[in-house]
Length: 540
Image 1 (cartoon, rainbow, N blue to C red):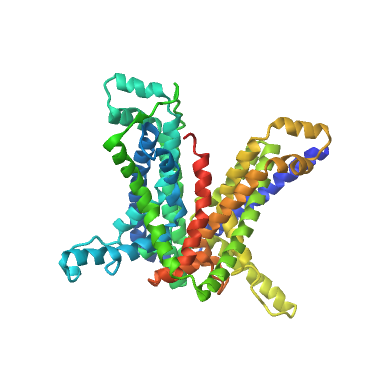
Image 2: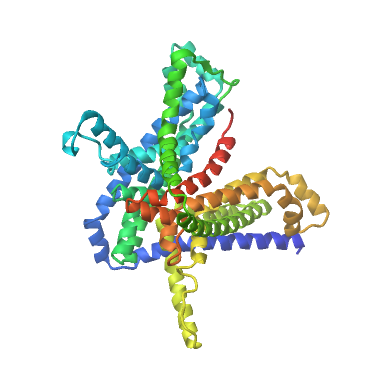
């Protein structure tokens, strides 16, 4: 057997091992959910589960519709019309993605609550004395959660809708105009149907992010399935009940993914014709369009970033800076480790699929990158269960050999990094795999003729060419890890706080000003993937 054949087979075995590791948390949750007695399941099904499921569906549907309306309308205006500031706004509309949803919730609650500046100004202007004198919408409600999450997550729909509208040729729109359709008719009858696959994919991403959220929905008092996992696990001490709620959440995620696939039905939408010429809007119409496009950006990024900056400027003192330094060090350590481990695993998967492009390898890679579709609370539960069992076995062995039993895996940085790597492996794989596809196969053939093994080909040929993609992968995972809340809250070591967990705990206690410096650091770190996303989006 040749050295190349042996090397290719070893890569295939490695991909299978990675896929099995990713599957462990999912299998653990499934196993724990079917082992408890039926009485617990009946109790959950007759008490809290219906409310959890209903609130999750209502929140996901509301945020999906809100993000769809904002993303589609903004993408159409940016792609079809030319107005003052269009080029700048085109890229800036991605910025709300840099603002974690829980920060948006904390800032707007602080901004709009009874003691906040908005209601205080209204009372001062109109002479109102108490809340009984006027009606103000409740911020901490299902409606408030839908509005805030829509403002934070609409860029996912905007990104895909923008790419779809740019890819549409001019002939379809011109044909609609010749048939008597106005600007809205061309959009409704031609532009929107052609962009349907992209829009469905964007809404699905928004739904996934909404289902995964814990900080914002808990702050708004919305009892979703994710909140239920936390309550049953941490407050009631029943991980088996939490696993059963997690199973319902996984079924919902699978149903969403299946619905997207069925709705698309394998259809492909093609466009033909040259690039569309944007319609010039000048004068009042142009500036009104600029204001309409800038408003979601102002509400989704400008207001919360400005509020956090205002608070942070008042917290720059020796004591707060010392605390911030420790928190930042913890976050950077975790994020760096997760970025490096995840990128290495992604490179292994992508290169293994390149060496052995067969169905088994493709299925293995697909399974290994499944973690991004698993909500963080479910993933944390699935990681902690097998690690706790493994620690018990190791403790018995240590005690048998006369050593003091200690936790080796559970409640350690290792467990946290593993869970984060599983969650963000799909993100890293997409970045690395796209870079690897840009390397022509002729280079592999040349390396083969020179007698290089697959490992030598990767080290001496591909790695120098993939330097940019690898660094981008590490940076993207690094930033997403800095913002990740559910996994960090549940798996971080005892008394080991990160920027995200610190912000969550203080802001939940209505102490947003005390954690503003940490919150602003998370936002600033999140701007990098936004820049990458705006550059990857097709066309200008």
